[in-house]
Amino acid sequence: MNTTFGKRLLNVPCLVWSSIFIIVPLFIVLYYTFSDGKGGFTLDNIYELGLYKDVFITSIIYALVATFICLILSYPFAYFLTKISPNSQKMMVLLVMLPMWMNLLIKTYSWTVILDNNGVLNRILNMLGFDSVKFMGTPGAVILGMVYDFIPYMILPIYTTISKIDKSYLEAAADLGSNSFSKIKRVVLPLSLPGVLSGITMVFVPSISTFYISQKLGNGMILLAGDIIETQFKIPNYPLGASMSLVLMIFIIISIAVMNKFGDNDKGGIMI
Image (tube, rainbow, N blue to C red; front, side, top):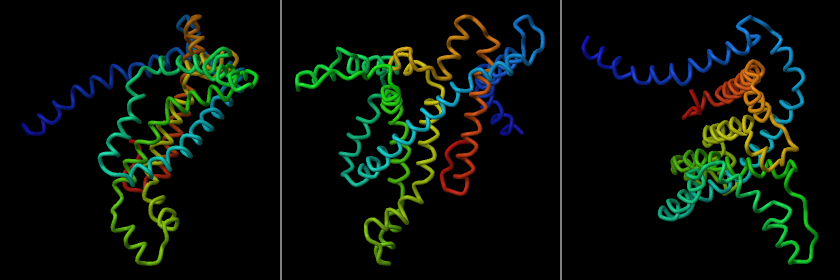
């Protein structure tokens, strides 16, 4: 009995933390979603979301593109990391993690210095005899910012999963006549699927809800769902902002559930 009580007591801090920072905010969002701002119940906030369907679609497209680019770039890089010496692996992983230690605002703002009309990149183009190119305020700039900020979250889970693959599987595949490409296709890819799904989730979720990246690199010309939510809370229009947050939250939960569904038969599930 004492042991059971002790285990429950150890769970108290986690329950308190979850209640204060997860459960209570969710109820606040629900309250404002179905509130008319004066405490009365209404569905007008839900109906008004139809005006922003294009913004939601744009956010989904941008998040999908950024996630796909991160996956295409990260998988070969993560696979390469597992093939170099242990000391080199530690150094490369450290370099991948270094940007994660910096504030996202600083990292994003640094790209404005590079992509601005008088920025570093256009100065290099002018020195080479080319005309200046407009980078800021374009979809490419926003997606570039997403890829740069979130690609470490794709690299690390894929690298971790691949590095834990038992080498005997690869040796068995070689004994059965598999070449390097066949081993990657038939052994490495299937066994690294949990890491891939984890990376997709970890990149897609912040990409679809971001707002600062689109504000700075989009130059105010590209609006994503996060931008509208921030604007509504600044006005303030809490009911509409909460309703948009709820829709985005539901979509994120569905995305995570789908990823878990595809990865629930694999060792090392991606999320709870």
